[in-house]
Length: 366
Image 1 (cartoon, rainbow, N blue to C red):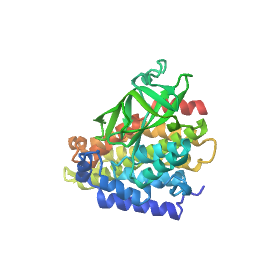
Image 2: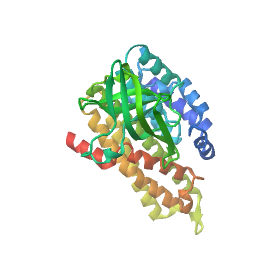
Image 3: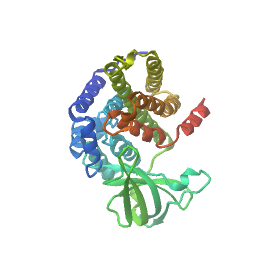
Image 4: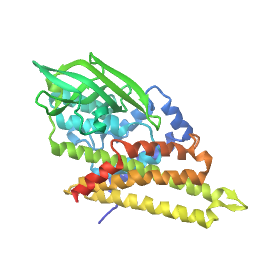
């Protein structure tokens, strides 16, 4: 198989790597997290100008029309910089849902706004009761003429702080779940922002009699939804791979320069063995991502992506623990990229589901 990148993919990779080199280091990343939205508005505009937000969208929508390979490439590069801008959760993932599920001017306006960086949308589907599949989902929707009214609560809207809209799931009177686009300024919608372990913002939603046009319902079939979720999972795993690589390289450089007993730490055989073991995990993760990417247009795409995610989500934390240990106590601090990267891996490994859940789905597809 040919794993070489084409010209567009190489260009995108170089553009994002340059963005990271010019705008990211440990201190600046911390400052971005402290901004009002939990990321840099200026960086967001630059990412939109560079076309990063437009990668998977069609040419007709003003996107780049690129495939899973390009998506994986840019998220590996974003991960290597431990970038805090919510490219997937605020633009690409909700944008793909809107492009597939809405129609007319409403669809075109929101998709264009997401690609240009002028709008952000957050997915709001998780509820507290979803931790137990036996419990019913509590957010409901009822018809009201040409409108619908939604009632309920959503526990997690990742990157929902200061979003312009939310894609909310609700159970209809027929017992069928549907998705709806709700503007952030809708009457009856209340949001509470809080931070995840990596410092990024999320939001909890309370919906009390939120009434919107029935045309805001996303008419999306199972096949489209599975493909979108598979691409999102691939992006998250690719980001984790980028973080793992950056943490490994930084630790390798530290071991080459930090001396103990008159010699670099990297000269000790026990340390070499530990790094060799983590290098093997890193390369296994890379191989699984490449397997998923090359199977994009085959029936195995979803299963291969699940397999990559299950392995990476579990082993990324092991790699992070080892890199922290090899740095000593300072490895856990926010003053080092190692500590910042590990916190991001912690979120990626548990969102939107635990690795064992993904592994069970992968096993069921075999």
